[in-house]
Length: 89
Image (cartoon, rainbow, N blue to C red; front, side):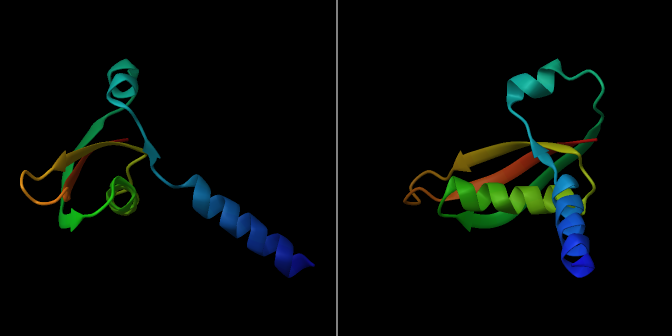
């Protein structure tokens, strides 16, 4: 029983540390955040969900508390996406 409780606490703590996605409007309205820079992921993604997952993972790696995703469709590429994000702490 103690093992299950410890596992649950560990999982909850791991999820609490994930970077939070923000909209451009939310980013403009937050006074207490500091920019950490911009990340670019050099992969073509088929879906926005794949791109967002990769951005969230990279934001977590760089210890960002928030990120604002920028997804750009590549012209003439059958809908492939390029992903970048503004990181904040």
